[in-house]
Image (tube, rainbow, N blue to C red; front, side, top):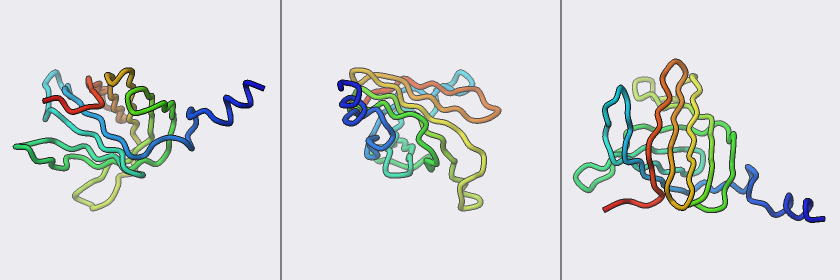
Length: 134
């Protein structure tokens, strides 16, 4: 009986995944150099906006389209493990590329990591929080 209740009411399935979340990365090491930090990741519907804050103004840096939810272990924004298959927006063609990548948000008690995995590119791992630091 407990197993049926747990399955029926658990938020650990893809249908209960929240699609209105924000995370903040405070390092983005690429070739051992931190690029454009802090970075705000906004998950809104089927898109993930990666925003840079410059002079107290958010500017869009990269746009991803979620094409598949690979993992959704979501208790709340502070405690979650979310993994998506994504496409990256290409400004030159004004469309989303065909090359599939992955992005993962792993958080416990408001602290965690954001992993970005592109084909033929080293994994990018950023320290992150669920709140904006002063």
